[in-house]
Amino acid sequence: MVDENFKDRVARKWDDMHKLWYRFSRNRLSVIGLVFVMAIILSAIFAPVLVPYPEHSEAFVDYAHASLSPRGDYWFGTDQFGRDVFSRIVFAFRGALVMGIGVLTAAAPIGVFLGLVAGYYNDTWRETLIMRTVDIFLSLPPLILALAVSSVLKPTLFNSMMAVCIAWWAWYARIAYGMASAIRNEFYIQSAELIGANFWHILTREMLPNCLGPILTKMTLDMGWVILIGASLSFVGMGEQPPKPALGTMVADGARYLPHMWWLAVFPAIAIMIIVLSFNLLGDGIRDMLSTEEV
Image (tube, rainbow, N blue to C red; front, side, top):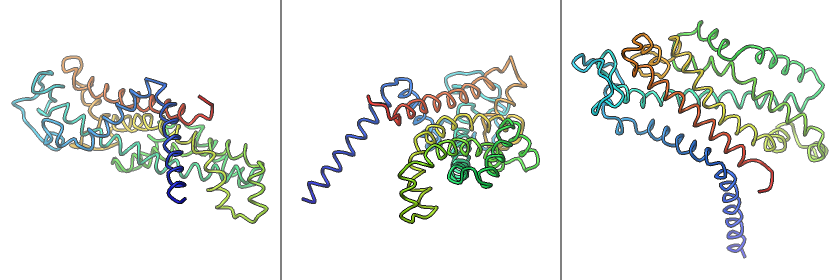
């Protein structure tokens, strides 16, 4: 009997996973986005063994091969110091992914928690205090706020992540608040309160599961935009510092040599575009996958 119940649970889980994948795979562009995202992640992890010149990701000078246009041994050409642009772009994926994952890992839980608290304590001073603070942060453009915070901090990858996190948490608070307010008076919430469920149980076991779909979708869509904001900070010198490669820094350095050495700015810019587009396509697929509509 135990084995049969276990097999039934496994079969149901497998069937649910098959349905989720079917919903996701109906959008061919989302599958393409997933392939590109996986390729970016794997290339960032295994960069030392994939790129032809891994030593070019650090402080390196080879003036004999400086400023070479794209060719067989240097696919994306070389920069003014003789470093392979392709190798540096692949290594720059690491910083970009760390930026996106780090910011969303910090901003999403903070924003979701505050949004759930505000939604649960609707029409109280707690809701007023939290949501008016959220309104203040949402009234400021994220890039401008991140630039303002970064300007008073030492230019490092960690500090730029902190700056973007400060500018990003309010969006998740707004989403969680809207959903929590909508389900606050549902019968299962009231029933949990009547049987003596505490505040943490209601937030984490009753409210949070009903908010995960939209939150996960937004996190996937935001991944590309956070990376774009991080590249913008690097572009103005407030992100990861040389000799570490950063996509925004590479674009800024290459822009000084346009149009003659066009590859220095064009290829890093294309890399940023591919990252943002890939995560947006993936987010569209996750939104369709988590949709409650029947297929």
